[in-house]
Image (cartoon, one colour):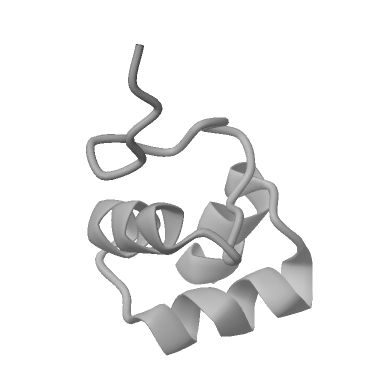
Length: 58
């Protein structure tokens, strides 16, 4: 069985791991934001997707 990360979405849909390139790609596409914006928001509010989404709405 292969453990290829190239076809993976977010492993845990409740958290954003900005240290994994495939997760950064997934979440920037899902949220419609740039990588730098994603990293900025995660740095400010933490990795929980509900918190990131709330911060982006405000």
